[in-house]
Length: 187
Image (cartoon, rainbow, N blue to C red):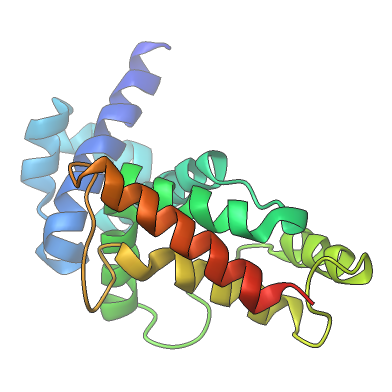
């Protein structure tokens, strides 16, 4: 990793922490710059604006969760469990998405530019193969599996799990989540 890439990585990490804690409006470029050990001028050269940095941070966090929890349409329960685990590993993503909803996109698709066609096609193929209930639109199946996996995430209205919770609690949640997804979407 060259010096510029290392600086960008530090900015993304410092920006993720700052924006997750304070949102877009409350996030301070000064704090991000100090934490990342990168000048504000360099940050602006890389990302153009605070909003540009937020966009890059959110994209980076989403990429991390996509890598950690790839969609496997023929195993939606396993996908849901991988998402649960990814939300434990990347709690900032849920907070960043919450801030994006509050400050930018209150309705509709949060990631309008995201191409979910391969995921939806995979779910449709699993439906055609008799593995997923064909009476439900693939986009709805995908949205509901994500929502079920977020049951204990920082976006939960009832309880937020952390990696520090007892292993038995995580095992129980994984088992419950997999069973619920299996029952909900298996024909």
